Length: 258
Image (cartoon, rainbow, N blue to C red; front, side, top):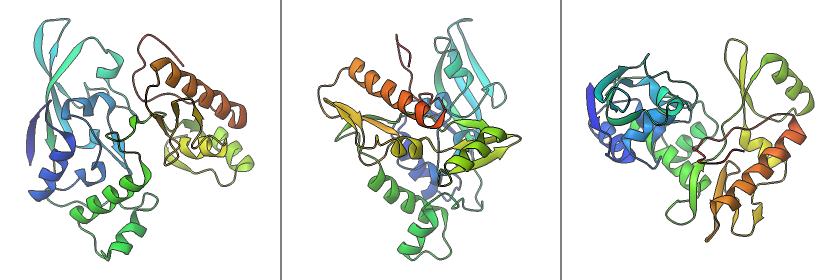
């Protein structure tokens, strides 16, 4: 099926709509807050699935040419939590996104904890709806609700390192999770490094690191942007000192850098 969805639609509602219609693919991206128009900017991903796999076209207003444009998947320049829309922040205003979804697709359940959650729910031959239910339950346990505690979701990307660096990390930190991602590159768990640095639940005034998930910076109430930036810089410095790896942010940081 080819779905054209306006940019202002709620992302999680769209995921549930596609599953109710019998389409597969979106189930691993359930329970991510935000709008459809934000999805291609970040090329959102979760539990082994990235949005770019299903995006065929992004419609936008080009503020440079003052024209409406349609960008195919190649022109979108998708990468890990990246796109041409993120690289050229002031150029495009996304107005709609087109997704191509299959009726049948093998479920992606190899990400840590998913199989176990499905087994606990009694789904021995899981369907996409079952996978969505399991992941929603995992996210509800692991991630703070932005309606309850201010946060922008995962604040740091999982670093991508070459095979030499990956081997060094394996030798020094045997339990640090990492995954090959093709070619010479490996993805390393930023959350595990932050937690190993003793920063899960860290707090500096009203700003801090979530005690539910080490990737999430939280505002317990009244923290300024500067206070959150101070915490982020402390996390980056602590991880680099312990592991020799520099963390990069996922959210846009305006008028400042880490």
